[in-house]
Image (cartoon, rainbow, N blue to C red; front, top):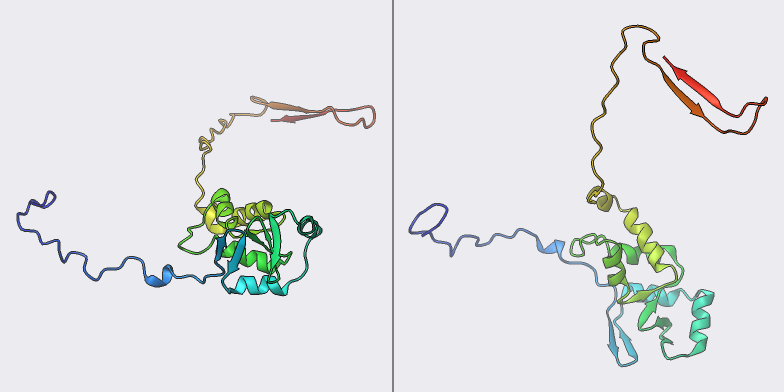
Amino acid sequence: MDILSRKDQVNTKEDNKDVQLLKDKMWTRKTTARITMLGRKVIPEEGDILKRIRKNNMREKKVTQTLEKNDGLTWEEDGVAYMEGRAYVPNNKELREEILRGHHDPVDVGHPGQLRMMELLKRNYWWPGLKEDVKKYVQGCFKCQQNKVQYQKKAEELHPLEIPQGPWQEISINIIGPLPKSNRMDVIVVIVD
């Protein structure tokens, strides 16, 4: 028996046949790179991002110094520098922007906040200032700001003052100061009728 309609014979087998709420194209997104760790060896799958990283040979001083230490946590392979198993992204604004966009804007990622986006990026990529770039990107996202939950208490309605019946029945005085001296004066008195 169906609880809502109270019918004895309800056929639910064919109820949602051939109904698709979210289309397949919403779930497909271009794979940029998949990095599989096998011990210390990294096997990159050819992706557009890794190709662009290889083309850009410029490295920041901090990265070059860390690679020279040869501490086992950083290494270079096939033109890509790896820092603790994550691919170093050179200082290329367009490349970094594309990586940020790919880990924030797609439907299946769902506009994550700063912490979740950092977690997604840190799985495969690293660059100096990554945290600040993520913060700026999320704060600049229109959809995130539009859907952001406001925790502040809503402002109460304004209660305007009653209009007085005649002049000088109600006055307000504001004293502004101390200010730098001008003609031996250091305050401003504002009287409103």
